[in-house]
Length: 268
Image (cartoon, rainbow, N blue to C red):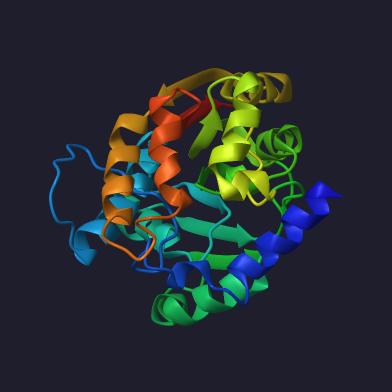
């Protein structure tokens, strides 16, 4: 039942509530951001937007995309990160899938000009991370940026990502995970979206095991929290949410309950 409740809350959050319109995000992105060298001070909206694009760039660089690649983004949202992949990394095509039709409708509106110009290179579809709507060995690269915390079965996602990748393909996943399973109870007390089931946060070692069990090799887990949490917290202080529970993300990181990770893996 908790899963059903979490799923309905996620549907509303990305549907009628339009999470991207909240002041903690900007530029149609919905992620915490990546600051290579964060220094305290006033953050402009442009800088906040760039931080979110930089989180995508950080993940995409690990994939070593080349011009012949067909790439899949799982949980593409409004697809502004998908466009970063297409324009800055130059693959043959990028497919974006998302469970929310509302998000895909927004993505189609926001990116209408590019879709019209290059319909064979930017393709957006409705689909689940747990049952990717593509045949096996379809993609050269696959990535997901701050979406996997909503996947209620990471074992299934790992299996599906492995299935749709070609031999030699690469996967990159960027999001937050518990540092250890024992952190769950304290995190529920600190983070509202974990307590109410919107975020289904697994332990990082569990996800690593899921990837290995699915058949991935060269699984690498990289902590990037030092480039995420302080900048995101500083931005929150500039919004109307400065006195809310969102400030607890940094506290949870400082208590080593949670961290932000970039996980990469390869298919033999």
